[in-house]
Amino acid sequence: MTQTPPANPEIKKKKWLPYLIRAIMAIVIAVTLLRQFVVPGSKASNFPIYLGVYFLANGILSLRLARSESVQARGLILAALATVIGGLALIVAFPFSSYRNSLISTDLGRYVFSAIVILIGLLQVQGVVHMTPQPILKRAHLVVGFLEILLGIVVLAAPIDWEANAVALIWTVLVAMYMFYVTQSLRSAQPSLVSARSSL
Image 1: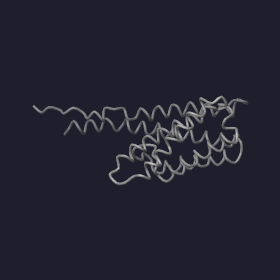
Image 2: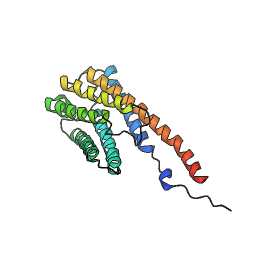
Image 3: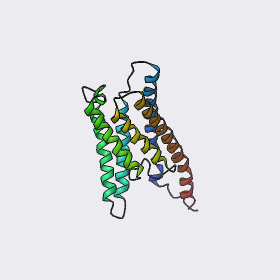
Image 4: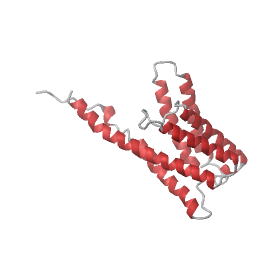
């Protein structure tokens, strides 16, 4: 009687869960951004925090992938570290600032925010910063990275207005859709991997 080998513990891990959490967070922020176009006077003060969490998650993932490379990957590691630092800067600066609602409206806040977003957008367009371990959709990093660059330029050019909010809303909705798609792809791939291991 042949004994079925246990499934690989790595397969049992819910690798899709972080992407589902990021998708749900994006939906919440998208609703907050949408309220600005419906309810006059409302502010989306949590958007920079979500952007920081998104950058931080991408930076940690990119750092793990860069360190696993067999060849010299100093440039990839530096790009990942820059993304991690940029994400942490947004996370720490906005929720713990006494000027949380107005920080990004100041000149210094706009310059710092724009510099971080444009730099990370450029790194993402170049493909050195990853949203997922493997590209689930071709050119997804190009679209998201381009929107990040555009958001940074718009915020840098003028105080926060409906143009920046519109770009941020489009970016957030696309990220939410992509994260849900990644979640579904990883969930549907797990049963097939487990069955393939069991048949060996």
